[in-house]
Amino acid sequence: MSEELTADVLVVGSGPCGVTLGNLLGLYGVSAVVVDADTEIYEFPRAVGIDDESLRTYQTIGVIDRLLEDIVQNTPIRYYTSWGRLIAHVEPSIRPFGWPRRSLFLQPHYEAVLRERLVTHPTVNLRTGHRLVSYAQDADGVTAELDTDDGRITARAKYLVGADGGRSTVRALAGIELVGSTAPEKWLVVDVAEDELDEPYSAVYCDPDRPVLVVPLPYGHRRFEFKITPTDDEDQLTDHTYVLEQLLAPRYRGTALPRVLRARVYLHHSRIAERFQDGRVFLAGDAAHLQPPFFGQGMNSGIRDATNLAWKLASVLSGAASERLLRSYDSERRDHAGKMVSFATRIGQMYSPYSPLTERARDLVFRGIQKFPGAKEYILQMKYKPMPRYVDGAVVRYQGANSDAAVGRMFMQPEVEDATGRRIRLDDCLGRGFAVIGAHVVPDSVLSAEATNWWRSVGATFVTVTAARPAPGPEAGVRRKRPSVTDDANGITVEDVDGAFRDWLLRRPGDDIIVLRPDRYVAMVCGRADFEQMTWQFRDLLGTAPAN
Image 1 (cartoon, rainbow, N blue to C red):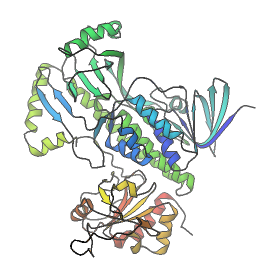
Image 2 (image 1 turned 60 degrees about the horizontal axis):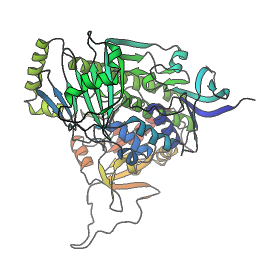
Image 3 (image 1 turned 90 degrees about the vertical axis):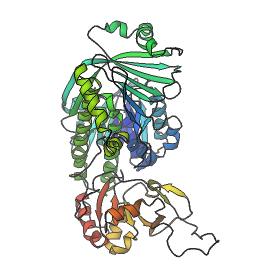
Image 4 (image 1 turned 45 degrees about the vertical axis):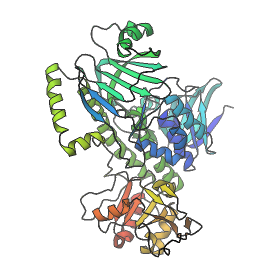
């Protein structure tokens, strides 16, 4: 009798998206099998940039400190004209979500850390050397056929997630098309080691003929990307000696040449799946969307997919939500993924201006707008990055009078102080599920027992954020006495030592209740008087029954 794997979720693909999804499912206690056709981690880096949103996900998973050991944080970007003028130095310093906005890493190291964590979850089973052949859905789940070195086996799960890359087998079997285009121009990607070039910044050399991207990586690695011209011989471009002598040597004048690890020609795709869900089957990561690498958001978009989908699957499987919650995955993620694809494509067009004349015009405009403080800050802090805003998914529409509605956006992550006097990032006190935050108010004190019990039934953590240094204080010269524990049966209390919640209330008077989803997006915002009735709105949105 052949082996049969069983789980609540079958994840096909253990690249960055799949292994992140598996870790989150394990964190939520969901049984999952993660399979991959390859037996080893791919030895060369593909993605090289990781943003603050992804790092926040890894904070939740519990691997952030280990990942940061191998990451170069807060790397700036410099943009140059074809004649060598520096037109912009982008150096983001703000950390709205608690982490640097742009950091660089080596993907093999990163994937190894995530796999190490994955196998520690007792509910998750990683199977490499398992290739998906087919699957069939029914009313209760999905049955998949997998080929292994020992023969064919069957896997049975309630849901299947295709995180199996741009050539996704899951997407092909589902009959879902990738809509969009493939740029006719090809690019050469060169990865080197033993790099001694003293240029600790990413660089974009804009040029009508051959734009070049340069990215410094940890441990003496560096990446170069060259646009291929019509006069290039592609066979020569994959010859390491030719690449070193003709393309790299001019950039290493006076510096020892590096060692070429690989040189590979790529096409850039700007495509998105027609839909991210087909019954009990979901697409995530490159299986759902492909974008050119000019803004470094391909992998990060996949991490957003995994973070969004994981808590929804866990909520449905635990009974905290009905299956209709899963429909919000497509509506929330497909729209934003499409915007990222379009944005990355436009950025690439800026790297390669149409002609020297258009480049001169763009240079004048670009330098001109930076003379305005607001515009310069907008560029310097990377505020041009399209951020997700979920308006038709798992959120309750904002009903207040304040104009800067935060509903559907990722919430800030300031530092707070717990009852022991320890400064921690906000997420570290929110738990794994929903968080009900009271800004200078005890949130469950303004709810009925029925509403409080319902929130607790879906795993919510109640958090009271007090003003910094609340009364009563100690006598002069006497240290303040603190309780010996940081939380009790009624929830957690922390102090607003950064003043972030103070500033929130100054901007949004009366909006003292904030409900965060497990992915740290704002599910709803209201005043204490409206919290009860908005609780029932959110319960209806999740489709759950009243708590006993």
